[in-house]
Amino acid sequence: MKDRDPEEFVEQQNSSDFTQIITHMYRGEVQRAYNWRNRLDRTTEWAIVILSAITTWVFTEPARRHELLLSVMIFMLALLWIESRRYRFYNVWLGRIKTLEENFIARTLYPKDEVSSREWMETLAEDLRDPKFKIPFWIAIAHRLRRVYFWLFSVTVLLWMGKLAVHPTPASDLMEMIGRAEMQVIPGFVVFTIIIGLLVTAGALAFLGTRYERKGVKLVEEDEIREEWDKMT
Image 1 (tube, rainbow, N blue to C red):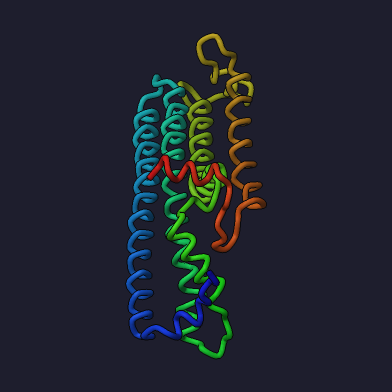
Image 2: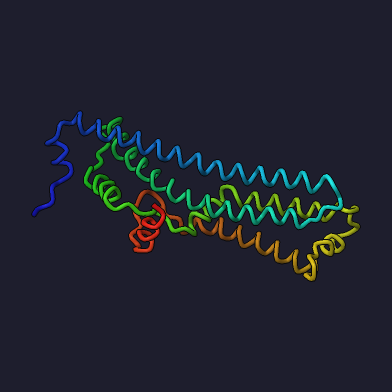
């Protein structure tokens, strides 16, 4: 059976009905994206609240250990994991919105711009029939690191270094500050090196990840992406 041409199919339908369907679909996808955008904001807000609370508590008493500030990074890692998962869902709805805005709404506002309906309608229909994530999980992590968490990690490390520098008494030099970073049997130099190394690694993932991040609304066809979608929905 010969496939029906999308543009010919639309022309055979009542144009007002078609426009109404697309309009309702667009409003629905915008609402979905808005809800998931709010979920992203909530995890970010929790990260900021936890960092602020622990920082205030640690710096109000010189005897309180610097490890408490490092423990904030563990909470942030958990929130980064949750937020990256949510961003993948948000990216699905955002992709559909961009498809409609660039190919339907823009064409309606400026009809002289010749844009074929075949490609975008086929892409959107396939996405609705067989939805899948558009980006791998590590790309989502890189994106959230670049936008939020790398900077929160950097602030946390700076605060941790500040705690080492001023408590219990102001450090006389850099080596004394580094020596205070010891944790149980782990020397301060080793702890300091590990923390800085982790921060550099996070920065590399955040900013080098942009070279591999997919642009536009093209769908990812890997079976793993589809399997992940099925598990998470």
